[in-house]
Amino acid sequence: MPTLGIDFGGTLIKLGIIDDGRTLGTATLPAHAADGLARRLVDVERALGDLCRGQALSARECLGVGIGFPATVDHALNRVLDEFRKYPDAVDINLSRWARERLGLPLVMDTDARLAAIGEWQHGAGKGCDSMVAIVLGTGIGTGVIMDGRVLRGCTGQAGILGGHQTIDVDGPVCYCGNVGCAEAVASVDNALAQVRSTPDYAGSPLSRSSSVDFATLFEVARDGDPSAKRAVDWVVTRWAVVAVNLIHAYAPERVVIGGGIMRSADLILPRIRDYVQRHALAPKTLSVDVCAAQWGTEAALLGADWLVRSSLNGRT
Image 1 (spheres, rainbow, N blue to C red):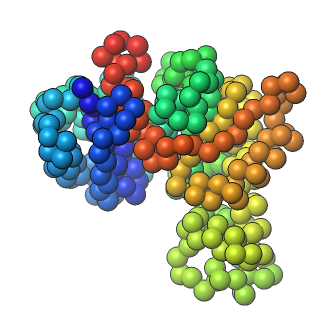
Image 2: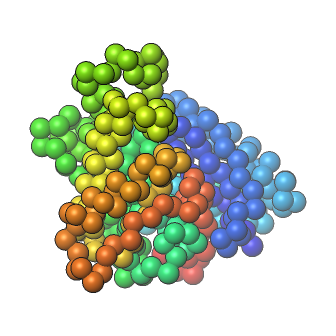
């Protein structure tokens, strides 16, 4: 029997019907996260119904629904603990009740990056690894850890997911989480562009002529050879590489899997991170850590949600 997966992102909500690692159908909705979760659940329910009809089944014929959420989650209680500037009403919504009453299904949930790590571990770039770290690069930096063949959660459920909130610059900007110099705050697109603007050739850069620049644009301009954009890419990817090294030191993985939409520019990202890891990670010379791109991209969390549902029913999450 298939499962339903929902990945609540800050920009897009991704939905899927998954059958033990095979994606049968997917859909996306604009997140409109600032409007709150309650308003989006009506559209999510409708979109899931459309997906199910496309597969000639009803939601109630599925095993359950798995949800990934971009915040701290109590996996045991299936509750959002901190909305982290997205979906401000999420902490007050009982999603288990919603799934039971509106879909007729049991629900399990976890953080989105952890589900992406699980998806890659089970079906993608981490398959065959007993210990791996996933880094999801986007508006923020999400992480998830598999250790000794088990999903790492810790006593608070936060183990392994706060890689984006490790301090990498004690004199850096204040992060929205309240900490100072978090990787997520330091290595954001705004900070990368600040580096561009500080270079003497910025006035002649294509970036100076755009009113809105994201990471995709920055990397595209760098690929075209613009020197200020290339320096900014070097600067921001080095900070991402610091995150990778810190996670290697903390969890001793055999593989680091890097995902997120920006990995369309993997040709500019992976060589830099691999070189930095090779030079700075304190790992036995006989055991070099493999750094690779995620295989499933934005579908990884949906595959992780499928595993979470099936494992929950078997009592082994």
